[in-house]
Image (cartoon, rainbow, N blue to C red; front, side, top):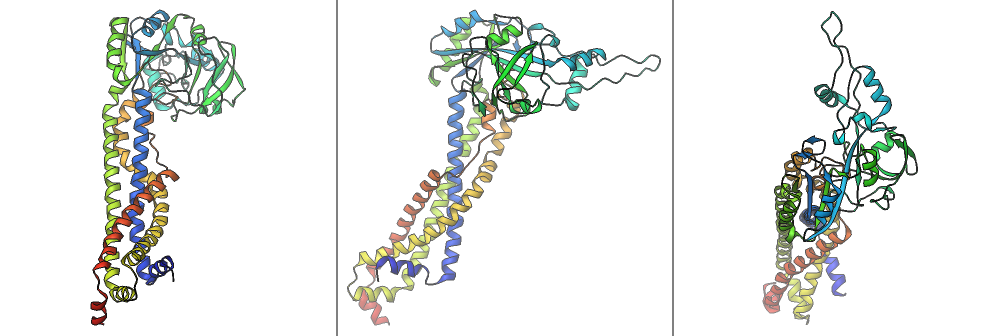
Length: 474
């Protein structure tokens, strides 16, 4: 009988014990693989985050962000100045708009209820669209409108306020000068294509998935803004209800719609390397003037979150090593027990001339059979549990960054942190772990390596068994 056949047979000699050993190994191996998957997921997400926002600076008008604050707007000339700053690799200008449905505006005006102000000091009624917002105002929207607009007139002689119609939320539109989001990454579309040349006027638009669904639109459909027809060229999914109630057009198109051809809401500045970010930020602020622009670095707001994710990565790696070590210890103890049980068998084999190498190989192969069975079950366990384990590990990190994400990104335009095309906080809260074949294979290879080491120790013990002593004892 060959060594391999004898090893497989010995592994199933005691089926109850084999089942128990495989079950224990499956738990240890499954935990090790799940931790490895979680570690890889967090490592990949941290790398993605650093790549997307680590070299990006955001420039806002001094004293203003989005549709709030004061100060003077940014201009195309300032974008040219920013592009000339050392270590700056690209500057992307944006123009933010709020679009309102013309029919809803008319209904609100008839009831004496006014809307919120629009971009650049315009009234929101000046930028109208045929689209209907994908998000209902609800309690919060109506409450905000009541605090900023006219809520109706007082009924004569009653002292009560007349009921006002439900307020409709504006649709956020952004004109952008390149096919990137606010983190400097390429736009990720779920359907269709981009807008081509983002620095030229165009009648194409990118819509959030829920905004398109609400209005029954798809790629190739048309809608209007300021009575001008636009064609849906692509759809994106921001991952949030607010973010998907938005659309993108090219920068010149947005400036034309706002009747402000030279004005920018914000600038996205990409630096050529992480090492030059601080120097570029200082030089950029000096070039633009502290009274003209505010330069912020998204990475600074995320340092705590990234630190938390690094802690999760370290914890998951330590847990992986511990689980791997546990599996190796289990193999060691099992094989030591088997060597002691089979002393007579080993003695007989050595008496008939079997070399120590052959006997040791038999025990190593038997251990690998048990590990292979445990790995199959453990891989299935890891595939099912890795996502939940990763979510549990990063839950505290996600809650830490939730407040940052809720405040919205610099500039208050879609695609910012928490914006429609997914900003940095979106990345942090969307860590997902999937048991990819490559990661599972690497984990199982590590388990087999530890198993071989664990089996070699009792295998070496076979060299100490002297046939004459074993046979005399029998």
